[in-house]
Image 1 (cartoon, helix red, strand yellow):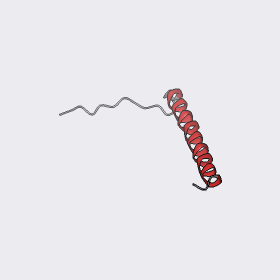
Image 2 (cartoon, one colour; image 1 turned 90 degrees about the horizontal axis):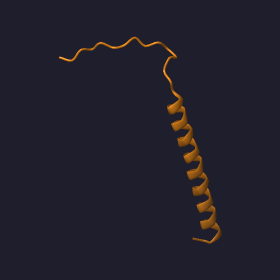
Image 3 (cartoon, helix red, strand yellow; image 1 turned 60 degrees about the vertical axis):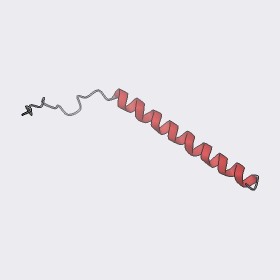
Image 4 (cartoon, one colour; image 1 turned 45 degrees about the vertical axis):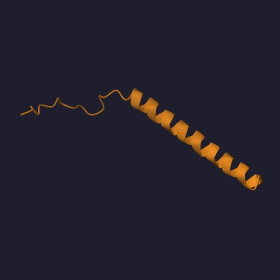
Length: 49
């Protein structure tokens, strides 16, 4: 069977810079998608599409 030996975890010791950068990118992309979707809806409303 597999050994279930886990290393001791020390709270706050993990480097999360990559996670924070990825999350910030995700939030920025989400904001752009929302803004472009709203702009498309406004354009459709103005052209009676």
